Image: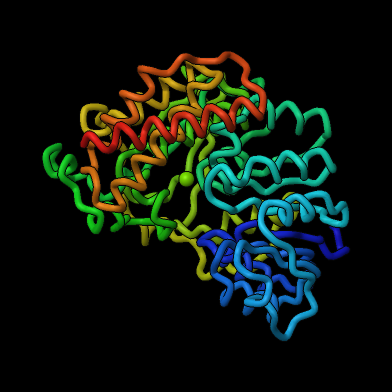
Length: 382
Ligand code: MG
């Protein structure tokens, strides 16, 4: 067992995953030393975190003066600050928990520097999965998924060559038992009322349309090098089975547990060790009583099909999917469009997109920008 303290940095420490990661680290104080904490513009929370955990560096987008407090951390700023953190070879592992495309470049920098990644940022793989996984392989860097489904699969897989298919579970979100019309006219409040998971706003809307699951099949494809036809989605409303794999001999291995993000976060940052950590109670099958499963309704949730399509097309198609969807989700959260318009808009933008086969990182960012502008234009017509 590794007794040395693991040196960790957290990108996105003030977000949903970041704050929960710090709860895990607080419980496992003797196992971790925090090198850097990077937050967005929530300077007050980042300052509190710096005072409590005393990292060597903090980084944010706000004014450096707002971060001064009872800590000795060097104050870094913006994306340059993230680059500096990810170039610091003192780190054993970096938890990438920022949301959006901002996660991609720091992740690549960390990989280049041989630092393991606990990855909670979906965009990194959806936008540039081919490049990221190739670079990680070349640098012998571990990419440990934090997303509960991929964390589950990571825990189930021993030998990937013997896997017949991946079975990714989805809670179905708040519209699972609602009619198609209710879903189409869903309000922001309804979309944000996720029955099982407490997450950020963008991902919660993605869970309501099942786009989150769509992005997850793309993540799974890259993480486990699995063709799309071998990645299956099943609706499982209780969110107790976090995902499963079927081996060629018909054996199915599933990872089961209470729906708490503390578990996958802790797994990812302590891998391959396991500790009691933040575990609140022991699992009981009899308390769960029953587990239900059903096929996804593609008429109600066509975004899922769109994601399979983008993934299968490959290249820049997933960059387009991600950018169009994200802009549409922001417009929905601003009450500019209806919930179902997220699909309609994303589908239209994807149909117009000329796919580039193997885009470079610069091309990926250029396509992302172009698609966002086009999507914003289209949104005006709604
Ligand atoms: Mg997930």
